[in-house]
Amino acid sequence: MKVAAMFGGGKAGLVEKPDPVAKEDFVLVKVRAVPMCTEYKLFKEGKQGDLFGHEAAGEVAAIAQPGKVKVGDRVVVMPQYPCGKCPLCLAGDYIYCEHGVDVHRVTGFPTGSATYSQYVLKQDWLLVPVPDGVSIEHASMACCGLGPTFGAMERMAVDSFDTVLVTGMGPVGLGGVINGTHRGARVIAVEGQPWRAALARKLGAAEVVDPADAGALKRIRDLTGGRGVDAAVDCSGAPQAQRLMIDAVRRRGRAAFVGESWDPLPVRVSDDMIRKGLVLHGSWHYNLALTPKLMEVIRGERARLDLLITHRFPMSRVQEAWELQATGNCGKVILDPWT
Image (cartoon, rainbow, N blue to C red; front, side):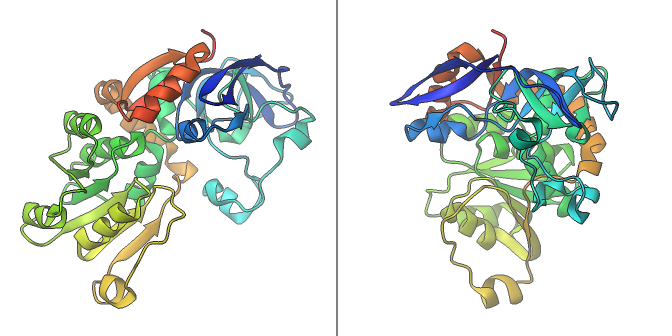
């Protein structure tokens, strides 16, 4: 099978690898759509390798035993390789599993864990059925396109009475605009990159604030009658935006951290949390039991998902796709592994 690879020095392309084989509850999925995520950052850094990607959608190609899917089923591939047995997995919060399974050891194959490929292996219980009438591309947004902010807004119980701040208009944050407005909330987006700020408006953001503006916090407060937003989701992973989010949330408000970050964030326990009464969430993904609800969002937001998915490339042009992502002038980008 063909697999996307980084060769270093700004070069990328395809390499040939052995086809993986289904074993036990690991199902072989023929990948039809690869939503691209943060792998482009590794490309920019000059990394090398061929095990990239954590999002995919396609169809079941082979099974080793009777289980939860059958050959020909259209499915979305959920991320990670959790154990499926611990309390977190059994409760649907598999994303937080601390006992991940080594797919290569279990199956005996060195391939099958990368989604930037023509085939991927995944436990059958982590394959979400694609409803009739929903395209594979749209369904693939059930991973990072819509998933992280959907999970965050579920935990914060965002509804039509809320004004929601979403910081960082990369593909995840743009998905947050869709999730927030789908719930009837008024969404204020935070983004300084002009291309993505414009796309946020097209997707339904009522206002877009530039975080580099010295008056950004005042503007957000002015837009909320001096009160602050009811809820907020940081999708940037940038301490400056995270700090703005905390300051912009009203007293007794809710905030969720979605954007990955390993940088220190100055937080004042008394002023920011105790005396302000904030509820803070760390939200990586969403509970598996909520998947049908998310699929209904996808079914109802097909027109806006066509705006969110801004570019499509054959996987043979993966270098060009990564170069585009590095400019920021795109929303969600999808690869076709078979062209």
